[in-house]
View 1: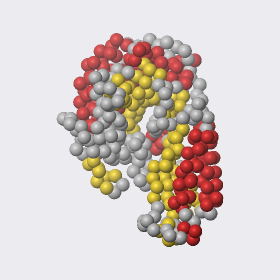
View 2: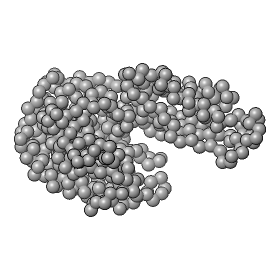
View 3: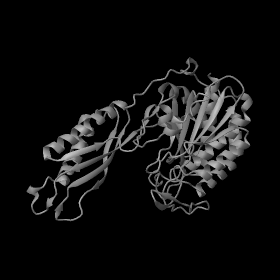
View 4: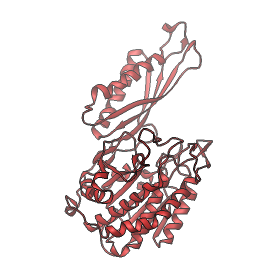
Length: 433
């Protein structure tokens, strides 16, 4: 079933309001004071990463710290998730702040004193593990915000939920995990969350910079599989076959026209990519079967709906024209909705971003076709997801390593802005309610 986005009405106080933080100068000073702690936490997480649904030691480390702050702590949510609740004791909104916890099966190539040498098990194989997407910084920044907000408890109105989420990168084969399971297990309930904020460090964005977008911000992801069944024959006598290889070739080319000829690309980008082709085992045998595996990325629900209609139409039409049979599985094993920044919330919190980073360092950016399971939270409540810079200023964007690579690197100095931003988001939203 396809999900339609629900638009949420925000409190009138949020719409078009320019906020004054409860103690903006003090937030800066407090972030300065704990920066060395935030860096130490980040180095620990980076040195000892754990894979999705296996973040046992990571969760224990976080839970111990949240307990030391006197928060109400719950563990074991969606396997290894941790939630801490800060209750001001006064009426007001419930604000959630989220960080993801898992590393990736990547062998680190950086020469760092806190370089990862850890291994883990992924789909039955022993693999290296690295925080190659910055989740180590996300956890450290959220722990820093938790410390500051706990110290400012007397200034708060309402409650704060600190959500440390496992398996953002996807659960291992045969398992479920991540934000979707946290939502199903009630992480946004008891107390009911009114709004959620999240951020992602960016290795390609200057330290000290915030990038944001309103509406569709990161793509929905829908993996799919096509199994084409034909008739096997000797490669010398193709007329005796129903050739699934040629059928697959025509199918791949036809699928590309969904985006290039059927979607209104001036509105939003979309992608349909085939990432895997398997079939046959000899040069002189036309196989009986070919398997294609691919991904769909969309930035609005209309485009997603159209591709869901068009893909089976293309697959069946090509198969029929070639005398073959085709089985389409869509989605294949998981899906992420569109990471959708509520426009009213985004507009309301823009002054917070501009005050925290400076107007010149707060940049409206284009959507990206990467995906984030923060979107499952945003399906339930208004949410805002932004990027904070982690690229050293003396490194060009072209020379900065990409996320999910062995050379991935972000500078520790970028985290202080994230700590301040999560804190100011919370204070300003509470002040408006």
